[in-house]
Image (cartoon, rainbow, N blue to C red; front, side):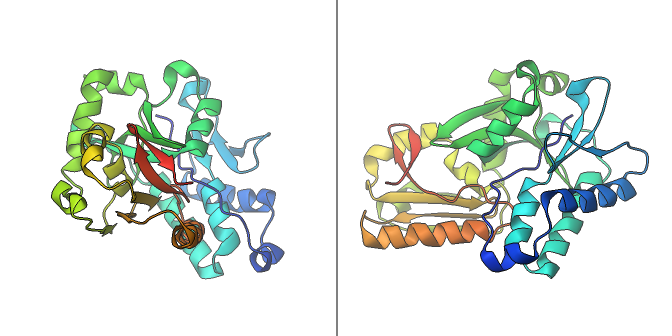
Length: 278
């Protein structure tokens, strides 16, 4: 199964960029770390993408791709200690022994446009992971959870689990909701804000667009949501204006501080989808 770990690359601030390694130097360091952890694999930096490490296979669709954009972007702004911690965590998770997946491991994962664009560029159409657009630059994907990694299965992996796409999506949604905190419709109708932290898959609270479509007529149009990371989602109410503009900047800054930012935007739910707040 192809493994992908990518998110929005952070913009570097001047002080960090002055001392930051080049993409080539960063990839060389990560190549050495991965090669030490995977002595049986032949790894190389992809010729036309210095922040991608590939383990070649005669069957291109089985190549393992290790995407470094996320951690490189994070390290441009992070302290040396935080950068080192993220590097170690990345290698540990990607090289941990993998357990055999089952249908009980299906989840819904939310990612941004950059992630989907990468999938489209890297994988043939008939072997891509399964995804659906839920908003402006925001997508839900089928995922398989495990103790060390989250992978995104292609259609053939779903078939190996005995599932069709039509069966996989509702099952994944049901199983994801079972591990997420409850979002109260009554609370939202009363204007109650929700700040969710320290759960995995939190942006998947936004993925059930059928639920949000049914709820939309009952909710204030001032409702907004952010999906800064897999472990932080904020749903509350704020009118358009200077206060919202200031809040947008805060969300962008929070995004830059994340090892894996999902989205730097503030969203509103309109006509069955999430749109970036103007």
